[in-house]
Image (cartoon, rainbow, N blue to C red; front, side, top):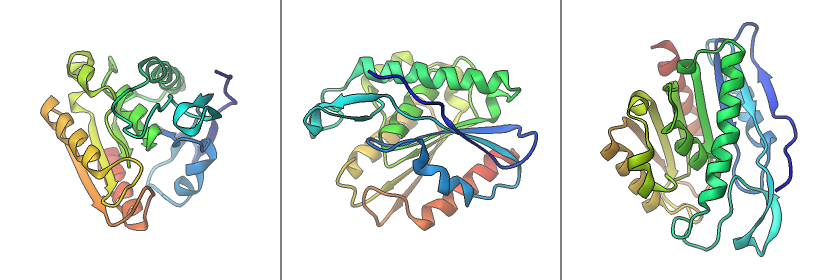
Length: 221
């Protein structure tokens, strides 16, 4: 697994007191969601961090090397999961969170966001924080290692708000898997704000508005 380049940093104003660590999907890189952040226009200065997933061979893509937070073995993405890869990416995100705290950002002002694979790592990591984060944006994704989450999640994280969005016609991460992940999180005691859209595996304009509204609400609490 190759090393990573430095994350892309976007700061929307001086003395930001809020950070959003945004994880891209399989085969993309940190640049993928920078344009979205640039048009978000939140009411407070925000420090965005866009890390790049490690380069690794991905089994479902014939072993082709690409940026991936973990390996995917087969078409059923939640059947045979790459536990080691998921845990390794959690450690990468944990280190980014620690860097933001070192920059003076309070944990409750740090948000994790991610699309597809990135959203899976965002959810997985947020549930295992010793100090709760501000919230998680989980877009077109699912809860990985759901079977072990029940015993690994830390109770104090249950105050962490979760925003989940999914396309009803998603051919990559099935809509039913997204719904099942939402229900699992609710069963664990998390408050999940669920949004669904008439789209496939993507992000739509209506969704961007909902993301912005949710972030503003969480920031102003």
